[in-house]
Length: 304
Image (cartoon, rainbow, N blue to C red; front, side, top):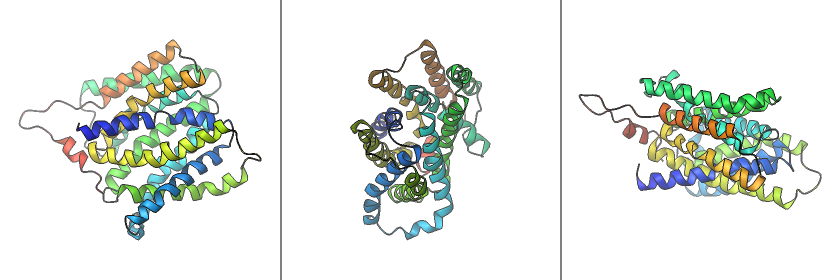
């Protein structure tokens, strides 16, 4: 990976490792629709002027179907589910469950005809180990009555695994900035009616407002710019590898800031999910007769 790739990787590891903490704080003071609306509306307000300065947006009309699908799978559906789940789950557990995204991405890519294949015993083993880790983490919560919250987070992981494939296959000719701005604007419009209906009667406290601002400006506006730059640099499958580090950031933030528990099961699940993800997404060794240049092909999946 290039130096630029590593810098983008480190930035995404941090930027999308802390949203779980901020969401946990924000849902204490506002409804889920208000949270998602503020996050998308402020993000769109920041990015739209920049996108308009780069050129007219009418060229995006011919891509409206994949744009709508991407917006639904990357923003509209998962951000609702994630925020709703964190009303019942700790931020650290949520971050760990999201770490299953690379495993799901490998399966989805394989089922939809991607060149990425589960063609070695090691990768199959990684898939199994990662799923065991998810089971270790989710089992106590399932017994405790939070089965729907666990399901919500796993659905979010599936959305996050699928959306980059749409971006790589159907939106590779669309510049990242206009695409992000349009998707956030669309999401904000979708959430406007439910946000109005559930708007708080009083101004939330400073802690909640700070969390909302961080989610909108850092974890949304800035994060998407870095995310698409990372996809262009290393490809969609490898771009999701930063989720290996996100759980560690989420756990540390939850323990230090919110005093969330750090149990043995969380540590075991983290090791299994992380190890399984690494194995499941590992590159197979080059075969005799030539080295397969998958990385080069992946780096060209999105152009701006």
